[in-house]
Length: 412
Image: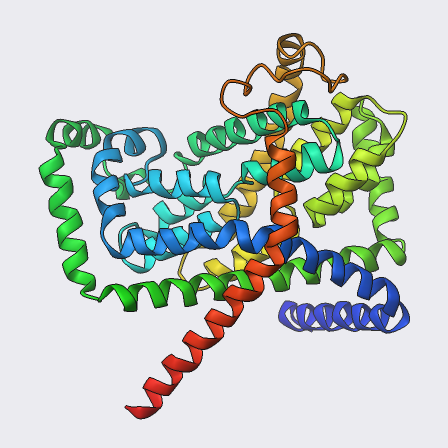
């Protein structure tokens, strides 16, 4: 039997076993589904949708092309991607995954980037947003806003490191030379940037209503897919735990953690976090008898790794283009490693700067001039209170637009 048939047999057995576990454990399956659904409509949908819609409009009106011309001399020498990559990078950090992948594919579909440039770009533009790091992880699970600072620093600096490493990915002969990037710096002007903006707008040639409707439909479809993966992997994580697969994998991982002088008690939360970061963060924060530094190092790793749930979302989005998933997966391993190392390195200096991580009282010096105390708690509560209402309202608008579009198509 060839490898293709073995692969078919393997997937058939895995799916059958998962189905059997769902039948045998309906209550646990239901609870896991509800947990994933709550995360999606409380936080993920309302926090991501505005960014995705605005991003689609900015691309459609040519603003991204305008930004791309101005950022070309910065992005090309550092990361070997076009200037439009700077927009994707910024939006990816602000809105969180999988928006970086969504925008990268959008640019690839418009031929603003090549396949190799897309694979470089998607590797470092998918990151967690500040709301999830500070609100859900630091405040929601650890009840300590200070740890959000080191988690965010390690996460975003690690992503930059991944981008710098991935610039060496792909053949240099097909990429523009660095001296061309510096030549472009001399030629960069607002007039040239505005010309690109105007050209892109004329190329799209869609009225505002059409652009807005397409942006809403595309964004909601992406978030429906994200919600499906969130629920699926929440259930999968629960089933793997019930049939002791997670415990077996944790036993293997504990050997590695022992070598790294990290408590093996964190092996189970680490495995859970590799599948779904929300559950991993919750379990890690609940482990007793281990140092806070070890908890944050482990959390940094699986937060940067993104979890198989997010990776499956990205794989589904990348399938719409010729951008391959393998470079993204390898970049996630790199990001996790960088984030864990950076957390270890920054722990001492930031601990002195913040007067200790263990104490949650007092001000947070790094952000206190910008973000008032209690900001992330209030923002998280706001999303949990009004998030479901916003989500349901937007789903009704999506349904209306979809029916209207189908009606117009049938008339023609």
